[in-house]
Length: 334
Image (tube, rainbow, N blue to C red; front, side, top):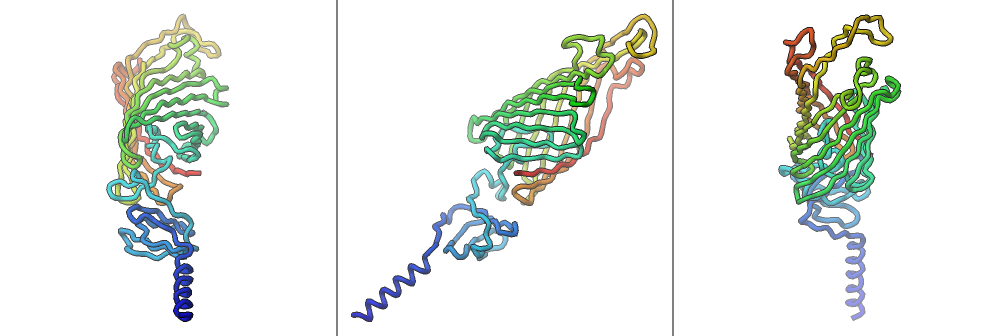
């Protein structure tokens, strides 16, 4: 009897020791496991005994990972699975190239975006409100951007946004402008489409010819529209499409008078309205995200402009012009 009791006690203590540190995992859920060296595995965890983790992935099958080599383990949300592939959900998925969508940025998921022409930084102050600053490498012009998002359904989001611009120390801060818009996004972070509409205006106060205009007539202004989208391509790539459509009055100047500060002489200055200008910016491109906090994208873009009455008094037949605008940029989450 004494031997039997000792044996049972030994078995109990051994079982307790082997089970110590074991973590219960829901085997029906998908997890993301990140190793200390940055390698990532996405799959279902079959076992976590406190010393090692057994994860099964679609590509590599079953893998044993020592707990000492693991940096983090987290559950993958349903919206992070697009077209059967895992997709990082974060602040990058709220942007296309120039424009953003109505999806919210999670609080404290700040991000920076570095373009060839300059940087921009955005801070997620709450789960629905973000504040950003953008500029060029010359630190002028400067832009202050704000966005507020709210959800209207499982896959429908709306947002209100604004950008206030200043020429900064360039032109003695005489130039300024703004763009205010509303957006609607349908879809999920890794796969969505967005439509925006707003109004923009800019005052090129450093232009001498504007001295002969006042108030609203002094500004270039008009409605602005945008269509953007994001779709998964492969495991780490995404196709992005961005666009902007603007309508504005085009004004041409013919100087036959005297402008202060110049040697031009004459009797008067004629300002001719050359009609309406339709401007379109198309930006199809690709985004590649190999790490959770970093991504790269490139766009083969171009600008197309059409003026109903030509671009100048001297050459009224020149109504269409195109400008290539290829760009690339880098995302960083911090």
